[in-house]
Image (cartoon, rainbow, N blue to C red; front, top):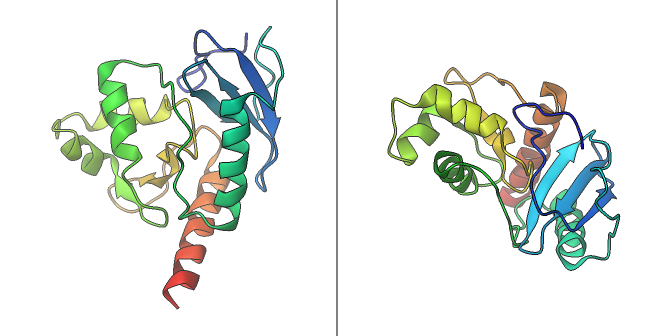
Length: 173
């Protein structure tokens, strides 16, 4: 088992894991029988979970990540098994509605889920997102437009946003 932090609580019932390449460093992915449950940068292998990049969910994810690096507007359809509280689940669903190349604030997300006063709790749920990139927590920024916390580091957050906005600019041209 890996160390636990706000973002890195290891999901339960994992059946397979794989290390996937990305332009920003390796990603550790893990799946349950129901769907993708974990996608982290810089994470070690997950305990005694078998390494199986051919597992259907992980193979699906690998194809979609490859497409994302070519065109970040390509939607993710990999099934998810996001394990969290009902509040976290609501935040994570709201994150998936942020289009590639766009950003919003924690307050925007709080309003979207009907809890406008829960800005700090939204920040905590955002930080606990178990599947970065697919559930795009990197698209959430501070109210004043600044980049704020990202478990994989602010340089990666900036790089992801730059990748998405550059592709969006090319598509608009």
